[in-house]
Length: 55
Image 1: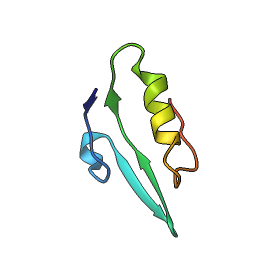
Image 2: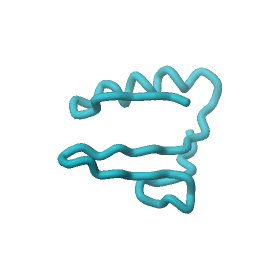
Image 3: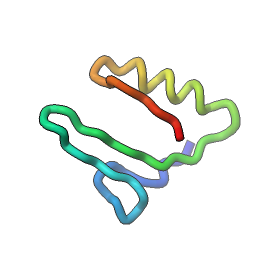
């Protein structure tokens, strides 16, 4: 997996918004075939993560 953008660097295609005590982070990632679901499950396993969407 290669991370193309980091949170807070909108020029690279990512975005971070602070919504009170909640941060909404968008990342653009390049992943190999079959890694998408395992990546989503890993992110969902973090206790403070409320929602994971893949678009």
